Structures are given as structure tokens and as C-alpha cells.
Length: 540
Image 1 (cartoon, rainbow, N blue to C red):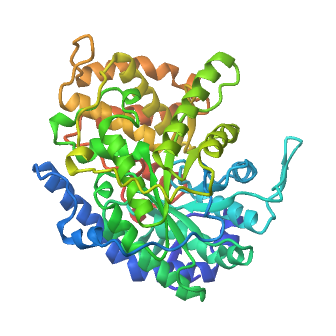
Image 2: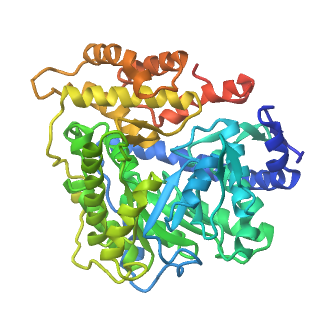
Image 3: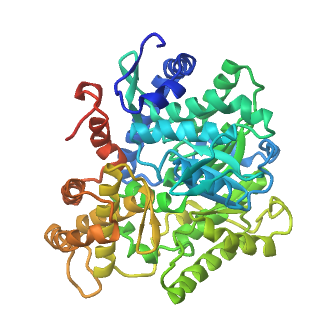
């Protein structure tokens, strides 16, 4: 064991021996000791910024970086091997079956997710590392229930999303401090696989989530430089695509690309987290109350402005402008309903490709052919970097527009309650993405449900019939929806549903919503992994 490193769970010991080697733990310790204080300070800076927004100071483009935005001559790195054409990217958690099915799906790339579609039990995190290592070495084939799962001859290019800067890996400490979940996920994957990926003609590629400031991108860039030197591979081998999924990041797209420019593979419209962030960051703004989630589409003014600015910014700097996720999944037992759902997917992908996006996300292998057909018919080259969108003029006011047609309905409240309860209960049980009413729900969509309920109660919003939304009103809806949760999420356990119900009822009564439900609920996973409470912050 590397000096100063402690593993506080005996869960999944065989995989631990494989992945948590002395060399890997020494690398994690080096990352932690080099970068933890910077991460800590940047998280404090987020809180300071939030208090500034709460006081009425509006978000704006940073004046201190105007020279970066104005300078036309700088560009990002050229596409790395396998990343020139990313027209369809499939995403999902890192369990073995999912990894094989996604890599075999026909999509150009697979974003293997340690973040929003994974519940970070220690088994999930460590087994995920084993599965990705085995896939890269082409040793992942297995049999289950009489069915063979085998990797195809030409699998999708692998991209990995680590957890965000805000999350700790509570089961591993360095010098008695939990390591960053980001550095844990990144570090183990990079240490074990970077050389093998390069040898295979690819490279260590990443998606970076939940950033709120260009200095957080600078931290990632410093991590990349350090890591490449540590294992002795050339600088600028790593590529990273940043999800623009927080409201502050939308005002700093140029700066984020600039900080990562030698490692950048572009930006992505992380639409669901972006809506969540728009509500959370403007929590003190009564004028920012949104209608039902179904009405907050990609065509409402503030979302459309964000999309257009992202495409313009990326293509100005010669990198990919990736589209987002359609939540629809195939409906196998109702052909008519399935066609309606798939028409929504086609419409969404057509909007993206005609706007100038270079690719899109899907959540299910059976949707690949729909997304692929739309992009093949409308994007004849490998990408659309040539679509400069010089017509676009987006001001701060456009990104903050409160003009969102729609209404708040009881159906919308019931839907939010069901999604929040089902997802939180499933997450505590170790499942990070679940289908609910033929939509794939992950942490981002559950977060929208949670903060919308809080926002509507906070500002005494009224539903379309005129009824005021109060804590008592939402309590009644929670009580009415709870008995049906196990029908829409059959794997949920009663005790986990009880925790989720208590959590949601507490959230709508807070002065401000919690930053992340994953941070709030993480102690349940840590406790289940057998970690003593002294090693993590507990609110149980």
C-alpha cells in the first residue's frame, strides 16, 4: 500500500487487488497531494459566487478575460485519432453488459459514465474500471443466461466521464482526507489504460462534467500535464470534451476552451443539468420560475441561445460542438406510442444537425439508427466545423431570458415527485439510471424534478387551476405517488423509498435547495460499504 493511503472498505476485494495496485495508489496519492488544495479553494469560490448571485448581481461574461474572447487567432488542438467524426455518441454506466452493448452499438463513440448514470457504490466504481480495462484489452467477452456477449471487431471509440469536482471518493483517503471522485475515476482509468489505448491507435479521452468556472478547467489541464509526465507519454495526448451544463459555464465557454486548448476535443450541450443549474443558480430570482419540465424544451429562448453560442464558440476555435441527450427510449409493447417517441428523437436530432452540431447523444442502442440516419443525411462530412454561425449574437440577457411558454400543472408536479422518488430510491440501492414512463432518467433529470418542486413551493407558484403550491400540497402528492413508485421502478426497496420520501419532503422546506442530491445521499452508499462514520461527512 502506498504511504498515507487508506482503503476503508473490504467490499469487492478481488477487483480491488486488480485495480488498486501499489502503483495506481501512488499515482492517486500524487494527484491528491498536488491538486487537492486547489480543488478545495475552487469549491469555496463556487459558494462565494452563489452568494453574489443571491444578492442580485447578475451573471455576465467575465470582464477580465475579454481579451481571450476577442482574440481570433487561437485555436484548439486538432481532433485526436477516432474523434474527427463523432456524429452519434452512446452513453451509459460501466457495467459489463452495458459496456459491450454500447461498444457494439454502431455509434461512433461510447461515453462510459462514472457520473450521472452511475450510483457510486464502491463495487460500481471498481468493477467499472475492471470492465473498461478488459474492453481495451479485448478480454471482456462473457456469457450470461445462455447468451454470449462479445466485443465486435470495430467497437466505438471509448470516452470516460469521471465524477465532478464536488464529489469525494469517501472510501479512499490520502493523509486522512478523502480523495476527489474526479481524480479517483480519472486517475485509475488513465494509469491502467493510457499506454494500451495509444498502442491501439486511440488515446485517453474524457468528458468533464459540472464545471462552473474557467479556473476549474485550468485545474483539469494541470492534472493532464502532470499525469502525462508522470507515466511518460507526450503532452497533449489526452483529449477532453467539456459538458457545458451549468449556467456560469455558459458565460465562459471561450475561456474553458482556452484553458484546455491543447487537450480540448470540444464542448457538449448538457441540457438536463443545464436546466437544473439555471434554476439553482437563480434560486433567489422570483422571475426565473419555470413551468413544467416538459415545457422547458431546447427551443425556448434561453436554451436556444445557449445552443447557438456553443456551436459558434466551438467552430470558431475548430473543435466539436456536441449536441445533447434525447431522453426517449424504445417502447416495445406499444408500436403507436413508440413511433410518437421516435418521431420526437428524429425531430430533436434534426434540430441539432441543422443548427450546426457535430454529433449527438443517445441513451439506447436501438436509437442509434435513427440518430445516425438524420446526421448521415444532413452532415455529409465528418463534422461541421466549417459552419461558423457568424450570424449568432448572444448577449447575457439572452442566456438569462425568463420567457418560457408553458404552465405548471398537477400532472407536472406528480411527474416530478415520481421521478425524484424513484430515482433517489434506486440510486441509494446502487442503480444510477432508470427508465420511468419510457424516459431514461439519471441524476440530472432527477435534479430538475427536485429543484422545480422546491422553486414552486418557495415562490408560492400556482398550478393552471389557480391552486397554490405549498409544502402541504406537495406532501399530499408525495403520499399519493409513493405507493405506485415500485410499479414504475420495480427494483426499488421499501427502506430506500422511505429515505427518498423523507429526503424530498425535507428539500421542499429548505431556504435554498441542496447543491446536489448525490452529495446529500452519498453517506448512505458509504455506510453500506462498511466505512466508519469518522471518515465521511454524514447527515444521516
